[in-house]
Image (tube, rainbow over all chains, first blue to last red; front, side):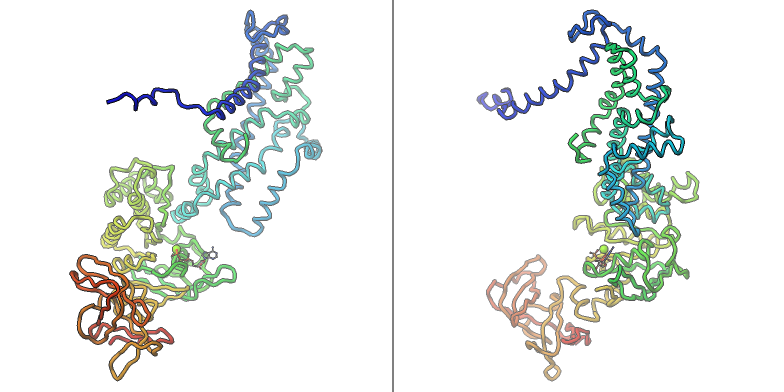
Length: 283
Length: 343
Ligand SMILES: Nc1ncnc2c1ncn2[C@@H]1O[C@H](COP(=O)(O)OP(=O)(O)OP(=O)(O)O)[C@@H](O)[C@H]1O
Ligand SMILES: [Mg+2]
């Protein structure tokens, strides 16, 4: 008997030089990404006088800023607005994008290909070009300064429809036909059979839509004028202007605004990674 | 319980007609098996009966009712698919109960049906499992259970066993047949496996290129195939065919002859000195099966398969002579390939 065979098991796993380079780069990238977040959080714990003292860990951390921000009714209002809007738009996308995607994937009808191309082609039009028509339309219909005005452009998206169509195509027809023979109507087949089979895609769609709407800035800024209806990002930027750059307050607001995003990421990390891979995006 | 009738049934996809006006009557409680090569239109026919494909011409009757325009659910039929089509996000119990989704039965009645079906199919212990944790055979049983709970007028099966291994397939064949005997429900069953057709069917329907070539009991089709195609399709190993002439009452092999003589390998025996028909040739391969040996040889340049008694294994490269007894010969017209009787 010799101890030789056990030696490799105890030794450090062999590390290839290429790996070290990759890890170093990833680590540096991570640091670059995280630093502003840490600064945001640390500034939110400082008093006004300490803001330009660039220490990572504040000398005397305090929660005063949070109390101040939260006791200002407007912030809660904006937080509430953002939550309602992001949730509604997300639910709407999950429902309608998949309904249309399913129809395009699983039903043969005249003009199907044309409809699909028409939807897809809207992906090529940048938001900046659409804002003016949206605005004119909202003004015409009296949608300015309303939740609906903020939400309507995003209630359905071409990307979501396309994503869901691709996924519904992977659902075998047999599943749907078996249900048809069992007497389910088409809506129930979609809801009870097809939807549960594409949950990974649905969660990806939900996450992307929620985050996109939570952080949306350009359109909500244009369509709202009354502070009552601001979403968080708009509210925070107005904060920045009127507070004459009180960084600690701005950073406190920003920290609070980031919270849901962080929560979504932490809780649904698994799905996000899978979703990104599924959607074939680069993250 | 129901009869099913096809009257001049036609199916076209765009301009391409794939079913060319077929006629068939399936009796109440009959087990009919559709066989034929890939692409001959078996699935299309079955799917039209189920209501999953529109009828392009002719009529389908279930009972006395023309069902051409009826939704699948109004036809009271159940279908079992090749890929089982059981739902991965539901338990076995939920899958079986799904057959009763729209049924007006009470919850207790539904539960009773599910339990009864599970018992019949030996699935009781698996009711709370997910399909992912089942074997192929178990999954197929779940699919059958789901069809059974509905008490349909007829079952339609589309190649239900083709994803199973040979042993399981043999076992499921027997189970489905037993189920049929027990329930007595009309069954239309599609397969391209002639063994399934022979072993399970009350009646076999042989299809080719969107036509029905022949329909009859397994023995009828085996004993009296209407043409060369059916003769070669039914029976394993496949029937030998050799050009021949009728030389004054005796059939002899002759290249380019006006007849084709068909000989089932089982009837063509090596080492028997003489019979109604004799061929000889050089052995190319032997397959000892234990109880007998399959002998492949070339006669007049054509491959022929014969059988040899168990312990007699001819050498490869040697010459063998094989003959068939009177009554074992199938004659066909070489030009039309239609049957001309037995000899
Ligand atoms: N949706 C369709 N569009 C056009 N042609 C089709 C369609 N479905 C089937 N066909 C054609 O109809 C013919 C019959 O197909 P079918 O699926 O009924 O064959 P099958 O006998 O079931 O074959 P297999 O044993 O391979 O399942 C084939 O030639 C096929 O190409
Ligand atoms: Mg088929």
